[in-house]
Image (cartoon, rainbow, N blue to C red; front, side, top):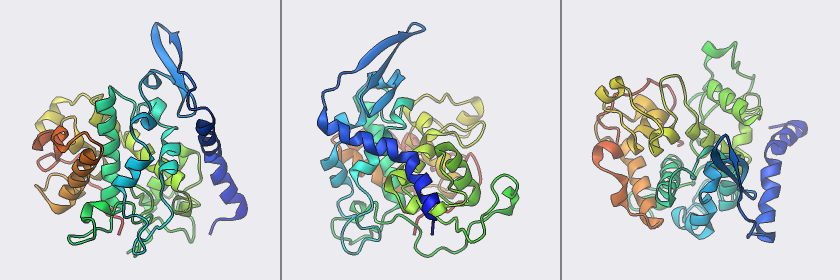
Length: 321
């Protein structure tokens, strides 16, 4: 367990975001601030998009995705048989997103694209944290956010190859935790650096704070994992321009490539396997519930990575349970 001092350092890293959520109830009509920087329009919008950014000139996520929709998408997460009852909620999601909306998460393009990206991100989240099955009450897609950690880890996920950059802490376990489960010491170390939270020494923080768990997943979503590979965000919204080699490898902008970025050969390049189809089904289901419609998900070659050559081989598990 974390020490009191260590736990306080973790909470301080997200304290500002947590506090500012309260202000939205007090004054939801705060106007958008606008200025021009080097000939380009940038904006700030209250607590949710509080950095000067071109993306903050668009609608923010809470303008089109609200508490009742989050409850619709994850309607079974607090049932007695779920494994993270009371952990996940809309407030944690929207608080976490405030750190990434100025970077374009859920704020790129028009409302249609913005809604699709939120559905895409949450499609990954739902599929990786589900305890749904074929005859589950409400259907197998209603059980996202059932978990916040791997229930029966098969190993401690310590890779000594990274002993000089991300050395494993004695006694620490780097099994899957979070909204898009984080595995392995090097991933905890890298994401912890991005969030300025000591996840290498305290990987348990992810399962103790839902805002931090969502922030870790969003960090993975907006960050390129390595040179030559786009972020899932850029692959989805079309910021990424495929090279000739990408085209030959059948990698193109869209939801399919987000799976390739996040899971590599564990999910992609194997045809229409169950693991891939599960992620796709959650995305389509959420598009329907958000009023966008699954028909907007795109054709098979954009929606899936069935025929894509994987960007990488990865030892990271593709499921949270």
